[in-house]
Length: 263
Image 1: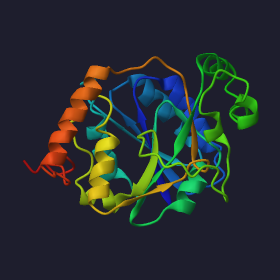
Image 2 (image 1 turned 180 degrees about the vertical axis):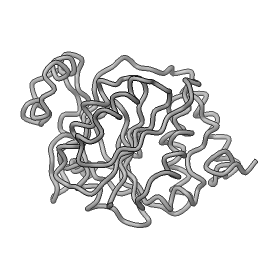
Image 3 (image 1 turned 135 degrees about the horizontal axis):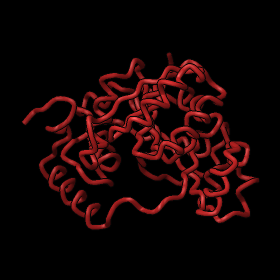
């Protein structure tokens, strides 16, 4: 296999079904999928057990024993230990991958770099309409241009020429890296137990401090973000930033509470 796609998932089984449908429609093959569930839901287990043979890829389902609150980083570390490939692409359970998503991650994988993609932000009305019909062909620049969606230009697929040279950092819903580079920094820091910062911004500064550079796959590896109400608070994000600033000041590039427990 060439690639592991990790889907960070929490409660929204309807979204997961759409994501798996989109992954089954990929232009590339020879990849595996890990459903990383930050919860335990018997309906997820039942659905995957009944339908996993309908997909052209193997599915591994990792989950918590129960809902302990935000423990996404803990689950991501479990995924690092469980995945069977050298390269991993991460998406969130509210993001639908473009048809060439896997192909572009395989094509752009390069040691010494992490890859960062972008998302089209589907509007509330567009998301509702899409969920009713679940027609993946509706997810294209031309079909979305006159909708209530945002960042539509990020959905222009341009595999050869860069559509935009604007540099933006790592966002946890669409990025990838050689697994070994995450092991070098002891994976994801499980000290972060609120959403925001810990699953992307913290990882980015530690990778950069360890000499890993950023490579953009904007307009190449595209995802479509399904609209939903914000599930985290500004206060929680600020607490995470303060936590990260303290770790930066201490130069804790290899986190203590990661794959290995170094405290």
